[in-house]
Length: 524
Image 1: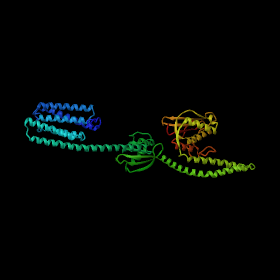
Image 2 (image 1 turned 45 degrees about the vertical axis):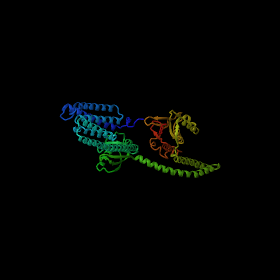
Image 3 (image 1 turned 30 degrees about the horizontal axis):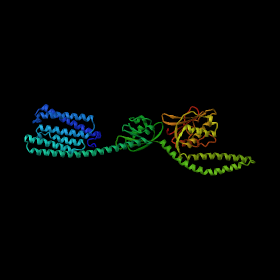
Image 4 (image 1 turned 90 degrees about the vertical axis):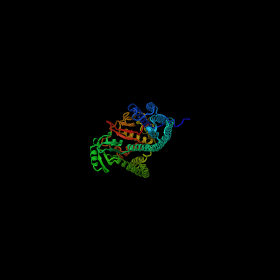
């Protein structure tokens, strides 16, 4: 079984290797310094006085070992603890030899061993620090013992050596404590960094998905950051754009606000006549930057209108439900009156009552349909299969539609409530047949894929006179109709049903006839 200490392959982080590289460069510098002292100064600095040849050989070997350690570390970034231990052992060995050849403790070279012990403790993050101190102590004690045996050194030198050994252990313990503190601070900083990065990603995601536009603007009026809704509301622009390039009105109002820099909200028309509400807010982290929140007034008004319509829809649905019973009684009474063949006037009045009750009943059915828009049971519909079944059922109501409606091709699938799509197509194709010519293929149905939006599109086009320009902006409003017996709710309900299924129904500009398009939410 492998020893975990000697088999930490590629497990040390980059900070460990970076510290070890600096430690190796320090070793090389010390070795070069000793070689330079011998070459330049000779014995002036009192180094290598007892054994000059041993000192020179030790210094040169120390430089070579330092270079080899650097090369090994660059080529093999593995076994960090092993490499560090070998380097420290080499430091202790060569420095002890140079200390011995220079006269022992009196030379002062032994102080470098304290630097080695301290450096090893910090580089190794406090691991094996006491072992390195013990190794250095054994080395200087052996050196002093050999000196005492060979040169009959003074016994007092052992006292100085003992103090030096105590210094090694004191340095090792201090380095270990400092290393633990560094490790703890590094772990805390790493954890805080991860938390901060996570918070930044969450904040960026929230800002990106906000329906309101957000701008970060510098004191000079330059946009530093923005989110997609801001780009969409103000027109596409890039970071670094000045407000004056986007809107002169917005740039002027921002300059006026910058004088006092207090939270302010105002409504203005910035681009393309669109009404926007802008909220100015000074950023907390910098006195120079400012936050601009931009809201689309039309969107807010549309949301308010949708809430009102939803409430009105529930109310009218309840009223319509209550109307059905008395309306059925009136219709039944009119049928009984119409059975009298002797009084022509009474029969005519009964027909009028019957026709109007039937119209009211259709209106009630349309209103009740509004109450079902939110109960969408979406499923994956394959267009070819769905349209084939729909066409057969529609032909039972209007057999002439088999030749007048043509499916010009297109295959695909999408998610939609089957009953809702039946209702939408029944209304759109019924209107198209009513206004189109009697020719074959007068109404075209085509399913396609929009490359620019990635959405499935269903187009319904007729060859009729088209929709009058004065009515094109109102055709989806409730109770707007050009048909004498119509209720004015057909297109309004069709759009509501599409929106409840994540689709969008629109009138497309066309040179001839009417062109309606349904853009589905997703492509399957």
